[in-house]
Image (cartoon, rainbow, N blue to C red):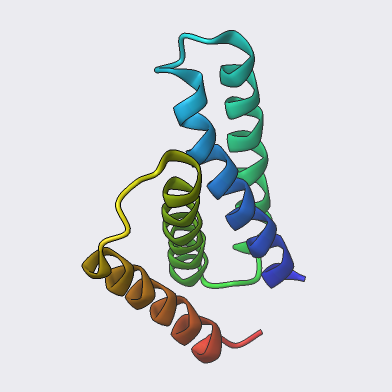
Length: 106
């Protein structure tokens, strides 16, 4: 169950990070409210995951999911650069997440 909580937390991390763009520096009320709600929920699910998982593993997976998802959505939604170096380094983050999952008990 902890990995499911962590996966949900990672998805919420992506939504939180992408929604930052829509808050326009926290100057727009409803995007800001949504941003804070998603941030609160994401940290809540992360806290449920670390009850069972090692905190270092959970935090690395959570932030790694955020990096990968936010980079992908930045490319899709905001036309951010798709340079191959950038994609290689995102793949390295992904390999680290997979390695942590494979080497963490539970």
